[in-house]
Length: 308
Image 1: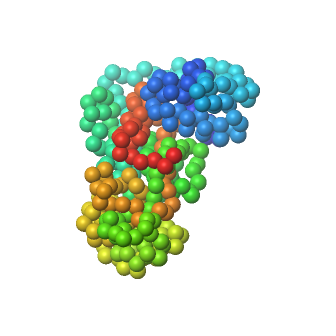
Image 2: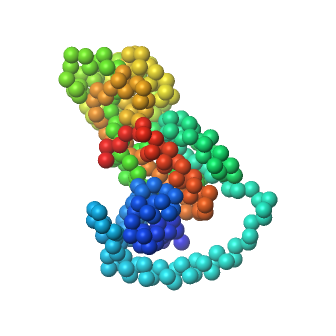
Image 3: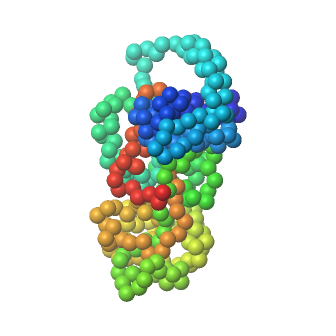
């Protein structure tokens, strides 16, 4: 069944859009973001290799001929799925709800998700989540596809190809950031040569993350000549930048709103893509609520900047 060019979640979203004709209304009905609805439908179309819906600004979504045929063929599939589901035993009232394992970016957890976690759990006290946080540059795509995690929310560079089960929900700017003093009397953005002469703060010395960061900088023509500090923690790097100690390469949302006048973009590099993963068998009301919570905590925070 893993070879099927769709997921049950994608089919649910597609059916909802067919019924409402509106991505916005489907997002409200499914209690997920509009970007999530759009992403699920796009992923389904990409995996099938056909366009299922016509999208026109200000008009209801309409089925293409291929979409109409696909919807008709789904009838038998849904009936068979319902018969299979009828074999499920009723869960005991004493049974524990599922524990969702979530692979998440370190900054996303600390800056966006954890500050809103208490409010979410107050509304959904029977939902249990276990977070595993890592900084950008690790291998989250391979990790979530390995089956250990029910959800994933993290950044990857825009040049990195995405498997079908992982969808892009936003793109944010990447670059070299530093104290505004490094830009005094100069036109922004600084050149790669000017950036190379500035003092750098890098990830942990000798780590894979440091090597990945240096390789990405080299790809932008930047070769740091002076390294003044190392830290594996993004918030420590931000503090060092705010104190004018040096510059660092990361994504725009890592800069807190209250420091945006102090820490500025000195040189743009490759952008980062915010991506989301949900395992096929993470289904039901609780799983839907977790998805909505994770995505909305970031995109609806008012402090996450996107480029498109």
